[in-house]
Image: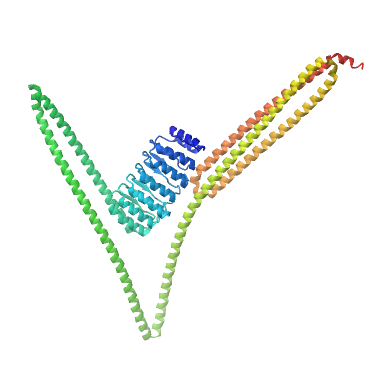
Length: 605
């Protein structure tokens, strides 16, 4: 994985982008043969680099990209790289909101890739676009390597189920298919049941949460049990045939060896002939054993053929039973309709009899008929109310399902927005830190320049003292000018000290403001966490990244404070050195003035 990590960094730098730190850390921790980037928000540049690497990668067998918030372009780039890959066996693309372009890229992958055996596509939206999903199903029909396919929660309706049924009729490799929690319904379930007699490899089909009637689910279970039994019988027959073929091959090798040894013995003297006579019964026994194994093999082949005939007969029986079941359902529907018609006719006759009896009965019978009519109306009202309640419940269920899909989409959108805001905040903080660092470096450069100027001024003063020794006659005036110059330098040093104190105070205030902004950002992140409580598991990674960024920022602030303290100590040391130099110069000038001959003559003037 270290070589893969270096190659990823190199490709990112060649394309002019920086590699993602989280991806680099994840690549550094992964075991051999497994690339797990789950919950990592992969950018388009990262997807492009990974797609180029996967074209030539021959060591990866498992690729996990679940909950990576892949864009349409990023998913297409990754799947294009996998089209020519021959090593990956397990691919997980759960929770990436793949849509039309993603379905078409997956179709291209299934048509070109011959190594992927397990494909997980849970929590995507492939079934929303009928044409793109039909393209995906067409590629699935032509694929001969895929063994397991997970399509849970993909908004697949009855049209998508019909496309899958057509694909299953042609596919001869898929063994497990998971379609739970979609919208297949009655029509889609019937289409899947009708395609199962043509498919002999699929032995596990999950259809829970699709509003499919129980009789269709039971028919699917029977078909799956039938395919599983057939696969078991086929595997057992293959194993027996392989064992028998190995035995026959072994006996043929022994026979050839014995024939060679017999030939060599006949060419040599009598001892070899005796050995041949001793070995001849063994060769005869081997021949008998070979003939027995051949008979067993032919018997096993006949038994296998018989089992296949039985399997075909069972398939025909199942098909006939399914047809009989369909006919029975049709007769049941017709009988139900006829019974309803008879019930309506009976009600009409009963109404006629009631009218006749109502005319012939007396007042008591008339009152009783009114009570019966009232009870009938009450029952009809109750039935109508129950029907309306059922309709309201059905509408509420549909609205809840729509609300659930909208909440999922909103949650995904909010998560992407939160990640974008976090990236923007990180970039803004990094830019402010860079600007602040550049500002501090400029200030330090100005301080160094001022120090150099002070040093040059001191050198000039020393030169002036040397000139003053050569020109003793003008020393008095120069001393006064030097005193004034020293006072100005002291004033400049005091002003610079004040400026340094003000600058340090301002820098501290800026650091406090930055800390306040970081605290505000942390508060905003906590508010987002409370708002997205349902997505707390997915946002844990973002919160940890934010905490790491905050810790990095605090460590950077601490390092800046340490650098500022060192600079303050250096400035204080420079100021002390300048004060010492100035005092030394002043003492030297005073000593020189006091020792000068002009000092003795000045009182007489």
